[in-house]
Length: 381
Ligand SMILES: Cc1cc2nc3c(=O)[nH]c(=O)nc-3n(C[C@H](O)[C@H](O)[C@H](O)COP(=O)(O)OP(=O)(O)OC[C@H]3O[C@@H](n4cnc5c(N)ncnc54)[C@H](O)[C@@H]3O)c2cc1C
View 1: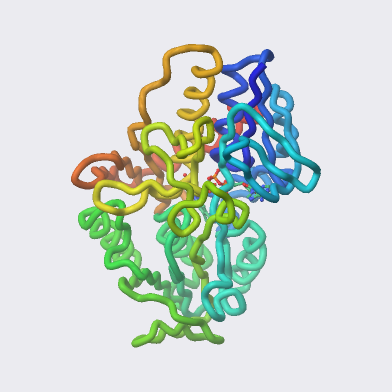
View 2 (view 1 turned 135 degrees about the vertical axis):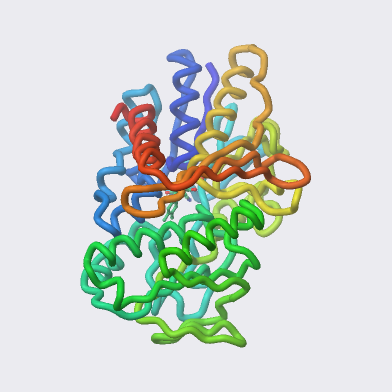
């Protein structure tokens, strides 16, 4: 009997574990470990802010995975031993024939002086209720969404947040009394979508009266003001997009590559340790133009499926699946009822090929179905 240990019960880990369990059946064991008892759908954080449903509606008890033949272990992982394919946890050691590391990326507002004290952080689910309350009480003034460091998960999300807030404030009849500005340290808005994709996004923001500034690196935040070095920007309400870092348990392990992220083979997502795979936000995959593969749930899901198929093939003595092709997509929300579809061939040379299909209600409907299909496939509904 083979045993597979999946570390992390987020988008990538749940995807990999459910595919593995389906492919391996009852003769083999799939164990999923997470410190949290619940899975939370990342995209719901923005929906919850503007009244498009509740965070809880996209949250599921990870123990439901037992119904799919997966053993869920609610534990804190304290160290990872890739050579021994095992982990130490707060409730003892676990070892397996294969490891899938899907431990995500941590938002770190503490790395930017003043950001945690003066800005909201909705890149962590715990930050959603406070911003929701402040938005409901908001009666006008300047809202700034500041990308305060790289990398961060879901590159289009700050711009989606701006467009959803635009719609939310119009609905409340106070848009005329509010300004919305997005700032980024990058020279263009969406580096993975290239210059053309970034220009398209800039036009969409401008059409809604949303300002944007590129090349602004947040140095520190004080009450009501962001210090960018040569520039300053005042705000009444700040939404900070914190720089993300790998979880310490990964950064301190033998898996850690440059800056603590896990380097993997871009076609197989296997690490330099045979039988140890890593997927999702915790990985660093460099593209032909030097940019990283975007950190997004949809990529973590696709990588999880590919890794599950590869491990199942090894266990069952079958042909390995084809290499991961770097194709992904995302629905960029442009109002509470519309979205654009961004599709990328991220492994294309000399740079990713990205196609944007414009704003429609159909795309927004497909994003809602994207969520429901995954909750159905992973948790039975
Ligand atoms: C506002 C916002 C909007 C987004 N919108 C979208 C979207 O529209 N589309 C999209 O595709 N993506 C979106 N994302 C991104 C998406 O949520 C992430 O990219 C995705 O969750 C990454 O999956 P993952 O499995 O790599 O990591 P995660 O989902 O973060 O899972 C990591 C898991 O590891 C666990 N863990 C970490 N350390 C330990 C430890 N030491 N011991 C035990 N457990 C541990 C954590 O508890 C967590 O459950 C959005 C994100 C945000 C913040």
